[in-house]
Length: 73
Image 1 (spheres, helix red, strand yellow):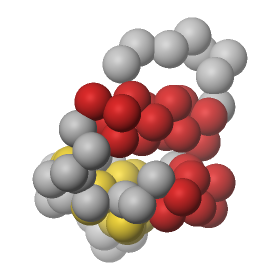
Image 2: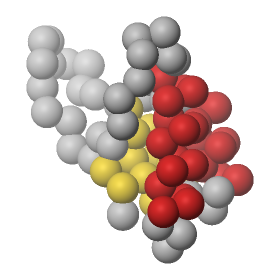
Image 3: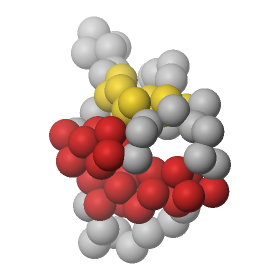
Image 4: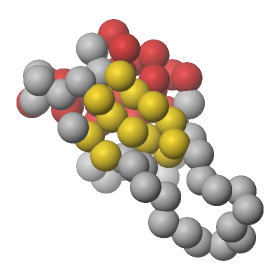
């Protein structure tokens, strides 16, 4: 999903979770970046999707791969 830069992470997260729930009603778990805080997590709960925010490792400076960010099962 691509959004305008003016769309907040939480708003985009809600839209994406809504699309996922509508198209794939058996999905029950999603992992997201910590930018998708409470609003998207609560919205996922209303859709029956358990959303967990996965923090990055603060001891690594610069880019690092973070397992489970935006994985949907």
